[in-house]
Image (spheres, rainbow over the protein chains, first blue to last red):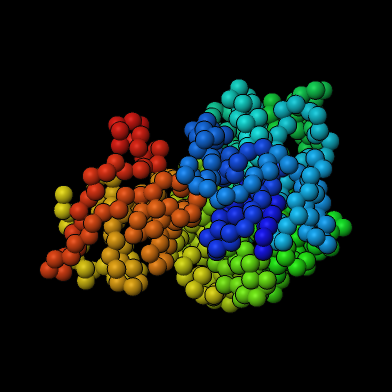
Length: 387
Length: 120
């Protein structure tokens, strides 16, 4: 293999590039990124960076003395993949022909239809998004967050700490019920009320009002919530449009095997855009977690370099964290698989729970709030039980 | 400075023992029976590596998955970028001692500020 193109220059792309070199690949390595920035860390964008406690230099994922001997094509959007010679076409007309391609194009924040061109309305996914939002939050005022998921909750928490008046609107009856289940979603989202942040659940957003700048969020029940700034945190969609017509099978992102292989030989997918097969569950999952974007590329790169002739190691159960209102929230496993959840340590009232999710008595997931030590023990136990 | 940590018999393989000195140092007993001491605080954010995931000669931070090599202190996985200090370990008469490095530690910004007498 003489040329490998990694399409996507965020954590998953960088991890793939690192894995290629660590696994002995010595050929030409081209990393293509549509943003102009070198790889940076996204979790702080909704927290320390947004709060002004962390600067841009500290977001860098690369160390100062790191040299992957890669050609970096940054500010270059991939617009097509020609399956015959695995040529990645770029928006500026250039083409990168490669023997191996790693698809790591991630996901993009969903926007609220009809909010285009209205000042004061933000999504948060990229460094540029975070810069713009940080500058607005610094002016203070009334913030309405649409969506009570992790991004929305972290922005609400950060904005509360900055002194803004914050309201969170969530269409579901319980925020975070998807990732955490109803009971624990209720306990974690109770952090908002603990800090005087209003949480409106079970009500959809009809639209926004304002001439050139947003002035209110209109709810489907007829209420209108005055707003100086609006953050839309309603999930992300995989960035795979550029692969249409390439022969790479798309289904909720890039459909790929347990080892990252796609339907095209010499092409693997990693990170938020990859819909990996989970052999234990017998289904495909697209997991949008930082940890997966860091860990999975090693398996995908091994597959690429071996021409698909390796048995993938069983991945660890998915793990993610969140920091809200000074509480460290950690989760591992799959809540949806559980038929029971019990609090094993701490208490809901004191927001320091260690909760274990089980299916037919076997642990399938664990949640910690300010419980890092027991959480890690359960996380290891979970990995041992499911490997 | 040689600091007594704990008895070797009290530190099973796969476990870590934290010394509550400033900054804290932890002794790791690997599954292979080796002993290593490193600074306990992840260089990315305030978290105790003694609470982390020990595998081979690597420990993963319990919060954000940064990995450190116990032998060299080098950081093997982001988001941390700076290494932790390593310290010499001596076992005498069944007691584990740590010779604390005189190098400057790489502490995360919030902890460094606290130790420097800044805000708690």
